[in-house]
Picture 1 (cartoon, rainbow, N blue to C red):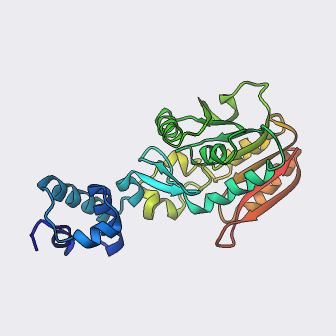
Picture 2: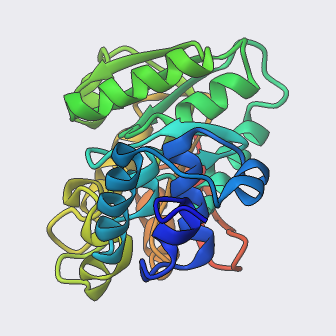
Picture 3: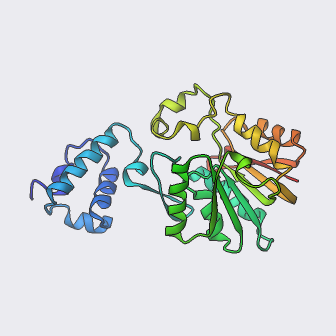
Length: 272
C-alpha cells in the first residue's frame, strides 16, 4: 500500500470514517464505491495536501457543507459557502407546506424573502415550473450563490436585492410568501456551538430577541398578499405561539403552525 494512498493518509486524521470518505470523494471526484475499491492507490501530492488542509478545517469545526461546497435539499444539490446559511432538512416543511398552498392554483406568484442560497425559492420553482417565483436578499454575495444555483439547476427564479418587502415594487402582490429569517436571539448559546459558529450571523440572529424580522414579515404581509394568499415563516422551537400572535395582530386569518420531522412547531402561517 502506497504511503500517499487515501487509506494511509486518512489513518490518523482524527475524523469519522464517513466524513473522511466524503472528503476524498469530493477531492477525487469519485463515488464511494470507487473509493472503497481503490483507497490503497497513490494520489497526487496536491490531493494529499488538499486532504490534509480540509481535514484540519473539519477538526476545527468548520461545517462539512462548506468544505464540500454543497448541501442536498429537497432532493437537489445546492452550492453553499460561508456567505449563506446551510440548508437544513427542517426547512423542507416550509417548502412542502408552500407547495400544498398553491397546489390548486395555476401560475401562482411566490416570493421567498431572504433567500440565502436560494434553496426555498428554487425548490418551489422546480416543483412548479408554471409559478412566477421571486427571491430577495440583502446580501449581494448570497444572491450570487442563489443565482448560480438557479442556473445550474435550471430553475426560473427572479432575484432582486433589498431588505425584505422593500426589495419589490410597492404594488407587488403574491399568492404565497415564504421566509426563513434570522430568528435566534442575541446571546443564545447555540450561536457559539457547532456549524452556527461559521455561518453568517446576519442570517441567524436579528441582534435582539429573535422576533424582529418575524414581526416585520408578519406586519407587512397583509399589504403584499393577494386575496386568499398565505404567508408561512420558519421560526425557532419556542416561537410558534409568538409568531401566531404576530400574524393575528397583523390582521391575517387562521394562524396555525406545522411541525418538523422532530415534532417541533417549526413554521407558522396565516392567510389574507
